[in-house]
Length: 176
Image 1 (cartoon, one colour):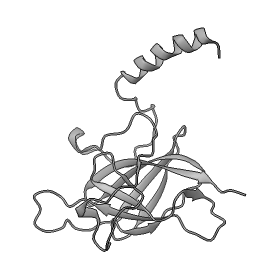
Image 2: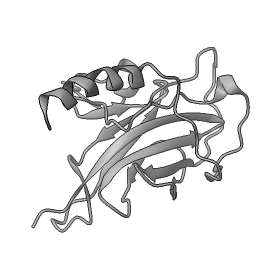
Image 3: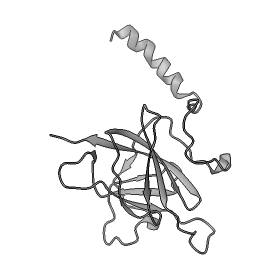
Image 4: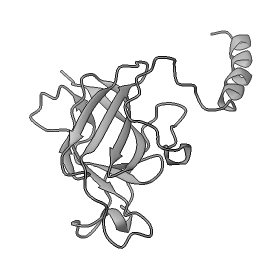
């Protein structure tokens, strides 16, 4: 790419980053009926796994002892965290390992008792496609093995107990 094209491309990219939220394509499948705009989780503008390796927050470290530094990804709203026991997540693993994820939901503020537990429904859409796949974790957030049908960056909509959040997870191709 020539220097002139790169110089012209920078302002275009900067302006694109200042635009409003991305529009949902017409005809995109509606997987969960909307409740109210305030109840909808924020959706990141671009598919980007926000992997962290620091300590888990107090609300997510039950059952862990000692150092709670583990790979994890927070939902966009911060209402759920995916603790990745398998990293990287791999499509069509051939190594005998599993794509094990522990889902931990943040307790609801102002609730003295937990909400009724319903399954965690994961509606995953691979970046660049509009064909979602659905996975279900019975009993709500907890331990799971989540395999997805292709390598790539996946946008997950997570629904459980009347709550919702989103996150992006990257599944890499199997090596070998």
